[in-house]
Image (cartoon, rainbow, N blue to C red; front, side, top):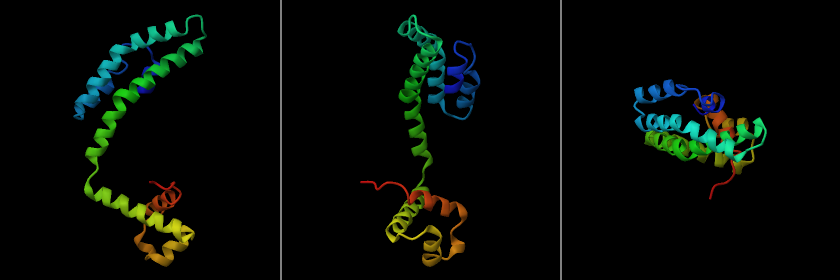
Length: 144
């Protein structure tokens, strides 16, 4: 929806399908925020024009896009975080923690992932996706 607003500025109904989809899927807060965005597009355009008076079309588009990005960061991102937390259950958290622990073990062992898997675990237990996740996680910076 963010891309639609940036590319089809000012066109009425651009967000209507997204608002309806959010509402149909039970994301009423998201639908309300998107409805508010559709009402704010003209205001964002006017502010961008005033900010870049005498500027190029590119400067106008950058100013408008910046306002849209700020709006999404302030209004949509928090809703996504809330939904993400709701969707995460204890089994998923335990799985992620196990992968993180295994990744830390790989980091400490200084072995290549394949060698570590073959030495430490029955290789058949680790699916390709697990190995990819472990490999990626083993390069993450240390958290404090």
